[in-house]
Length: 411
Image (cartoon, rainbow, N blue to C red; front, side, top):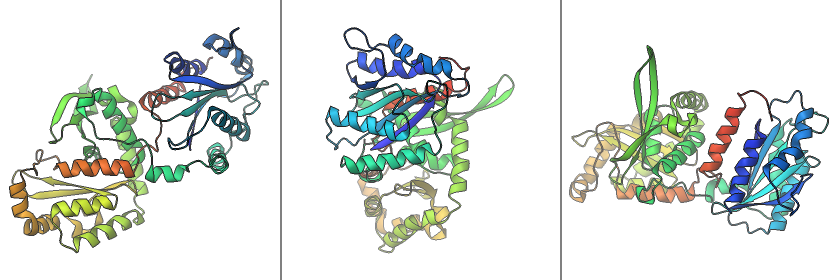
């Protein structure tokens, strides 16, 4: 089970998000404590606001008095409403919110049932509920509940289960939503040290990104533009400015991610698994197709950059278990582009010439083939990017809640 805690300022925002799901018929109130209901026993936003109002009026110090929690059992965990309600109540009791007013919503808008809990972080006297080591305590509670209710552990879900992060499929429509979901997931989960490495990671999922520069009102401007790719690696549809997707995948966010990744990847141990695996497979002197397939079985993707003459001039590896992206040069000279070009030229020249499937994009892009597509789908099934986490609407809501922290206080 995955547990996420999101503090915020907007009680109305948290309630309206969940009420919208109820109105759409994909959610319901599973349990409530100290909440005012209508005559027929239902809930509405005005009465819920009144239930929390005394607590918020008493608050005079806590900047983020609202708490919105999501509890996400794995789809394979078959739980009754009674069990889900009991899990939510036990979680709130152990986290210190058992005496607070709160609502437990059961959502069914995606392929798994999950819970959303809305409450406040201050008691009736205005004193803040103790949040020291909150995440650590939440993890301990989560593990206890997993054991008690025989749930699939969150750690296991990260590696073997979850909502698949599939490559963009333009035929299914809503391309912007697909691109957004992929970009946010990869930006959050993986480590990479350059735009080129980030682009390589996106390419696996039929997405690419480009940096755009310009000048606005006399000031230099840097931005990112995302595009969907078809199976041949060609851009399709309209591109999307990062600003239309969210700040979390914009230029500034990318630079911060690159900086933090560089710091984290100073630990050379991150490279050990990939270096050992790749070196072992290269020793067999495979052709390119066999090399890619064997890497895939070991949880590693590889993308080769080629010029118009077909020469490999760049190689990028993506270790899905280490959640790390790196160019071959970072691993060592024996993993350079020249090494692979010579290896595959000797073993693969005639095969590539006859297959007709090994087409490059342009001089700055990546090779893509049906083999890579199947590899991406296989990796998505084995190494979940989101730990079967929230859907797009939930991610958007969380971002709105965070932005509201910077606005003035108020109910």
